Image (tube, rainbow, N blue to C red; front, top):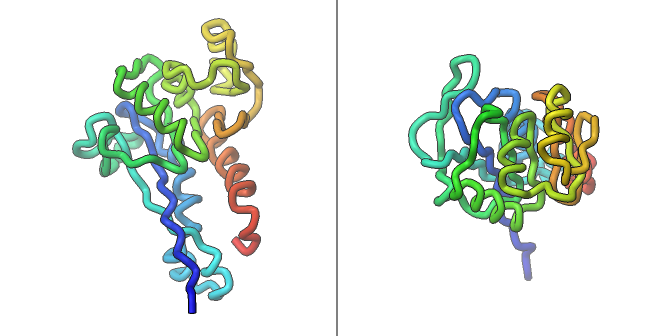
Amino acid sequence: MSTAETPAPLQVGIILLSDGVQLLDVSSADILGMMQPSYLRACSLPESIIAQGVEMEFHYVTESGEGMQAMTAGFRLGVTDSIATCPPLDILILGGPSPAYVPSPAVISFLRTQLAHCDAFMTVCTGIFPALHAGTLSGRAATGPKGLLPLLGKQHPDVKWERKRWVRDGKIWTSGTITNGLDSMAAFMRERFADRAGL
């Protein structure tokens, strides 16, 4: 008797490119995490719902892959991977560094490579800046922090800027400030997991 092959866990990457990324920028990862069978089981949900859960592996990625990453509110986040050791991702969440942050050639190469592989490349708030440096948004529709849109329009006229909470163009999902990333993730999940209505 044949048995259905267990799907490989989705690879989710939370990309942290400088100190001081806001916790809320990357909190959308937690919404994904709540779809895991282990979480659903801990909530004592029916087996019919647990069976719809999705296994995931989360990677907290910095350029060096070392130590703890300083976030806002004094929070420090354990790093699991460098850009060199991070596996190909299915879902990439790019939290916002300082607007003055300039990615290294290695980071630019990493972002371009991951974009080619992933199903969803998601920027939150100033996470739009590294994506722009990497040239991933040229000719695409996008959004960013509302107060910065006039500046972004002048600096990057090749991007089709929209004044919205979030914008999707193919596999790229961009969002405005902070909690807009939660709206973007919710929209992505409704589409990506539409067959799991129980969740």
